[in-house]
Length: 120
Image (tube, rainbow, N blue to C red):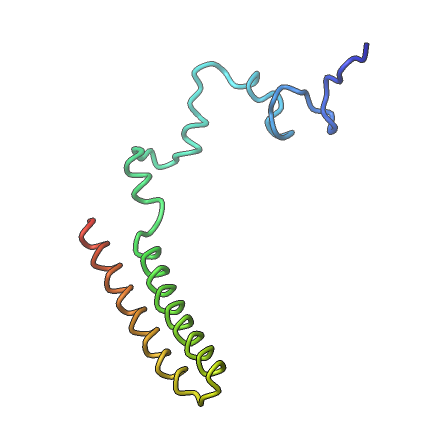
């Protein structure tokens, strides 16, 4: 019968701990020591305050607005270019669909802002 190793490839114990920095830390920490909690939350904020300050809410909205505008304009321009290429016409469809795409992007951004304002 083959005996299974008691150590992993790096010489650490096979006790489910992921990295060498955590080997044996459970045995070194005294019972009831809350110092690890202070490291995770140094300001002593409540969980609700921590969630609110975790990110800037306007940045996510601004990124999505910019993406909506750019992608809609690119899709409109691409559709116009494809029509021009297919119909062997000048850049007329490209120009017209560029404006259609930009209008669709502005409309999507407007709807996004108003839905975000209504939810807050």
